[in-house]
Amino acid sequence: MYLLFDIGATKTRLALSKDLKSFADPVIFDTEQDYEKGIAGICNHVERMTREEIKGIAGGISGTLDATRSKLTRSPNLSGWVNKPIDERLETDFKCPVFIENDAAVVGLGEAVSGAGMGKSIVMYMTVSTGVGGARIVNGEIDEHALGFEPGTEIIDMQHTLEELVSGRAVEERFGKKAYEISQDNFIWEELAEKLAYGLHNSRVHWSPDVIVLGGSMITGSPAIQVSRVEMYLKEISKVYPIQPIIKKAQLGAVGGLYGALAYLNSRLG
Image (cartoon, rainbow, N blue to C red; front, side, top):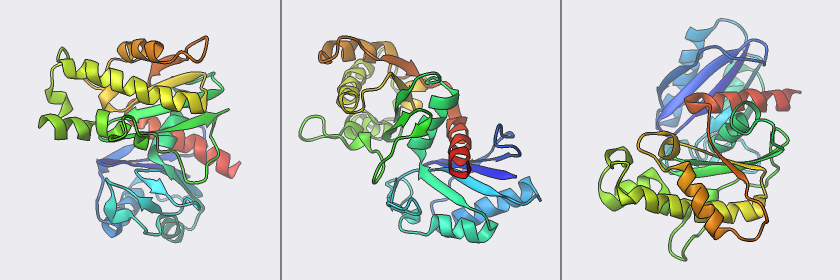
């Protein structure tokens, strides 16, 4: 039996796979902000899910990982997990290899191999939700990197990062209400679409993708940033290439990270 996980800012998802080809219905629960309680919670849930031996574990976690991909060095949403030996602890508890990546990169991998990016060699994935993250997926694998991808921190106007302009957190701080409380016909959504297009342009000229996949609650929720409007603004902004990349909305929803974890574990064990 193999364990897949997706430890997000608010929710943690666990699923089991018998054959590394598919996975059972996930168990979903609130993410624990305290590291010790979080690890204990994962272990307790797995004990209830199966009595079989766990042979391998893989998944994503919200934040920036160190060069060895063993612990978080920065995580605005999971500060209690920073600098804690996540992989070492899970390896000790389950006595099997553990592979960890950034959660946005793992979701992007899932969309590349099983979702909106299927069939494309180079996939640029961007998630816009509480924060902004993303990754470059090449030929069905997360592209090589030294310390991960953080497209949300790209500087847009000398004062603000992309995340500070288009994330759900940024909207709440600016307007004093949750994004889902703002009606779809409000000018705010049009403004967000234009700002996001600038961020996509910057990542696009560095990553040169075949397709751009957009996910996260600010894209797939209701109300949301409209992909068609982002595409229109990107065409106006980006003049360097003769053709524009396809822009698609993510297809895998809340389980994209588990599809990515499945692919990631296959590549690490293969």
